[in-house]
Image 1: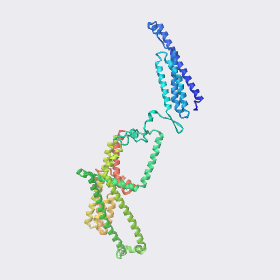
Image 2: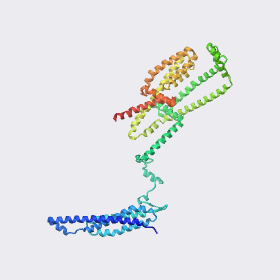
Image 3: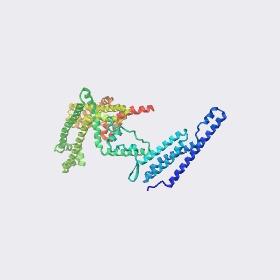
Image 4: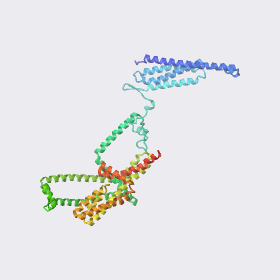
Length: 535
């Protein structure tokens, strides 16, 4: 047999019923007293209409009070059912609770019906009692929809029984998500609230963890990331050439191919120009060092070096080191190390070239994807600023290539005039080192000047004078005119950016620092400063 309500619950219910009956009776007595006072005042005025009106049918206050009392009882039972049934239905004796509550509701029902038959004035109260009874019956019907699952009760609403579960039903999932042609994966919902302290703390901890993981990933994949950045930098720098060919009428595919072939041709030409003379010079130096009438023999005949050799035996130590058996092992180890460096360099160059080709061909798609990450209301301005930043990076790369080309051509002409051997290879070396900001031109000039002294003392002096004069012309005439329209950065900012970039990433950092400084300067001038003026 199922258990019934406990005695404490029954006493609580009876106490609630008694309290509500007292309140209803007090309200009914107050309404009756107000009615008697109004009738007495009307009789004293002596108006004729009051007598006729008092002769009509009047509602009994006590009868209205009884109806209100029964109405309160019905309301109480309906509230009692709505409040207690869900908690009681979790027990195994849910049927007993529902039957007892329903029986209590029906026991008070005839009293409300009797009170409603008294007069016409109590009709609204009877209607409200009927609605309360219907609410109680609806609660009872809801209680009937109980199924035992796992020993506990589960209330299933009728309006949810026939609905499909979007977790298991694909059609229901698409219907509730609002899938259409514009939103193939459903319409975006409302943003989640982030005002709760727990949510704020969770997002903060998640952000710190993500930042730490990003730093670790960047540290571990630093070499690969540098290659990707260099390739993207080259793609952005070569994009103005592609756009120039497109304006002529060449399709973007053929424009990318032509520009890429020109880049590959430059690297291949540099390799063919620099490798043979470098190999010949290395072989000649080794032969002169080890031959009987080479550099060591000439140094022995020098009076100053003979005096030093008598004191410290420098030449004898040098000859013994060159003729020792360990020289071959050390040379082999050096060759292996140089070979590893060469293989790594070739692999890096090929990787950069391939990535540059892909980035250059899909640059409009990449920029479009990045612009779509911005909010719709600010997307147009972000696109304009992004296009300007890309244009400045491209202008910087194009201008730097032009300056390096001028330096290489001028060096080649001068070296041919003075008769320095391997003028083409040395000119290409000057052009490549000139790409490095601040110190690149000086490095190339010192290296070429040192090699030119092997062709003669006056040739070396003339080469040194040439590079000193040319660097002044380049720094104060050529470079300002070329870079003024492309970068638009103050010289002090350029120097500071190049120093910081070189300290962080070496030569690559120095190359990337100046266009990065130009982008930051543009954002500060166009975004930050206008907001400061408005505040």
